[in-house]
Amino acid sequence: MTAINTISTEPHGRRPTRTFTPAKIMIYGVLAVAALYYVLPLYVMIVTSLKGMPEIRLGNIFSPPVEITFQPWSTAWTSACTGLYCEGLKVGFWNSVQILIPSVIISILIASVNGYALANWRFKGSEIFFSVLLFGAFIPYQVMLYPLVIITRELRIFGTLTGIIVIHTIFGMPILTLLFRNYFASLPTELFKAARVDGAGFWRIFFQIMVPLSAPIFIVAVIIQVTGIWNDFLLGVIFAGSKNIPMTVQLNNIVNSTQGVKEYNVNMAATILTGAVPLLVYFFSGKYFVRGIAAGAVKG
Amino acid sequence: MSHAARPNTLFKNLNAKVAAVPMIATVLIVFIGCTLWTVVLSFTSSRSLPELTFVGFDQYTRLFNTPRWNVSAINLGIFGVFTLVFSTVIGFILAALMDQKIRFEGAFRTVFLYPYALSFIVTGLVWQWILTPTFGIQRVVRDLGFETFTFSILNDQRFAIYAVVIAGLWHGTGLVMALMLAGLRGIDEDIWKASRVDGIPVWKTYLFIVIPMMRPVFITTIVLVSTGIVRVYDLVVALTGGGPGNASEVPAKYVYEFMFRRANLGQGLAASTIMLTTVLIIIIPWALMEYRGGKRK
Image (tube, rainbow over all chains, first blue to last red):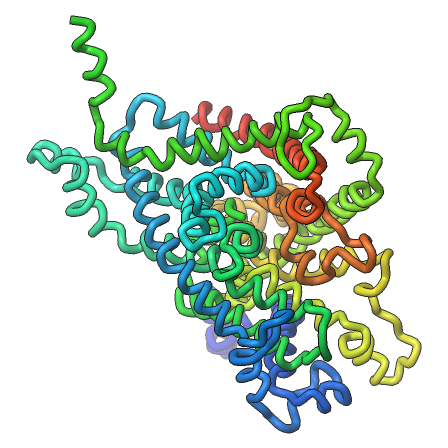
């Protein structure tokens, strides 16, 4: 009898962990509170953007909208004002797209080839240049801004699309080169050696062996660049020129412009629209994003 | 003979050198050239245009006699200390909690990390809205019946910089958590088994065994966060615009204003050189340590 009892209450092997120990409850409690703090701003943004102005003036920022309206969203997109112009955020969106696509492609092309050269074709001095390049990632932009303005002005690309693309390519180089160099260096050297024995040269090995093996790292690089360039403000303000001002800059002009009555719902809709691109990248890329920020934390 | 040998080494491995031309140009012209230009010109009396009339440390003397700069520097100190301490402590605690074999780890991680994907402009504008006294948290608490509750840090010269801290923590703590979690996952499971066998409480194991073992992770995190702190700019522009008055100005904004708005280049260059010096003070010891650590391996 006792034997049976012991067996039934205390099975052999590891005791399955109970889900609701006091310690666990506390852990989940703390995490939930922290999660609430993180989610709340996104919630407030969405809720505010769906209310009409009278409701905003009456209610509080956390209450869900009584009457849902998408008017603020369309206003933000098509006719929100930045100072004199009232053409909406779509202008900034398309400017950002125009800056983003060539910047991402060119910076990744250059950095991947460069990382490959540094990993597999080292030459005298290559490591020194690479060290200084990494060091450069930590230099505040402010230190290099003015001379870069002079250089781009002399090259007649200051305030142009080409100008801002070149600037993004330059400042993306340290982190991307590091990313690609480390990845190519981690591939088995036998591959590289075998290809060399077979007579393949620099470019052939790169395009036929290295690139096909490197899809994950290219994805990480794209994520770093898309979020980084989309979120840029300072470089866009200075180098893009008034015809190409990126979305972040236009957003700030819309929300922080002193003229007119503040339309908080439109402002929040505009803010979500600007954050949407990196947020979508984040939610759909999952582990690649985490890998990217581990490497991309150096950037800024 | 020796004549023929020279071009040989230069053209050896030519493709790799061609591939590295953008990097070499960036390093020499931008990272070294532009930085030196800025440092050198910060010792001149340049106003609206760069000129080579050297005036010694005049720009720096004037800088540290300018109230706006001193406010900026002090703000950076406040912002830096609070951000560093809180993001490290909260980041570590969150990581430690996430490391308890919990359910929904992926969901929690997604939630903690998403602000990091957003720009500082978006972050600043959201928090500006939440902290607006007339509609935000102050209004909400007053509506609950606490009529005299006051939480208007955005409009208060004494506290505006702490609004920047709050928004900055929201943006960046997830990153610290992710780095710390990676560090915790790197700790050998046997350490935990041994401490459990010895009956050491969990908090003691963290404090006296795990954290000391994670020293490199902490140092890297602190260096990354601090160099980010020195550069804080967009967040302030979006959240407070440096106001009320000059109450939440930061050095990066000072540089921008004096270089591009006030045509007082010398001041902007001197201020940016101070920023550079601050970053160097943070990363040189770190770089030396990493370098030595690398050699030991």
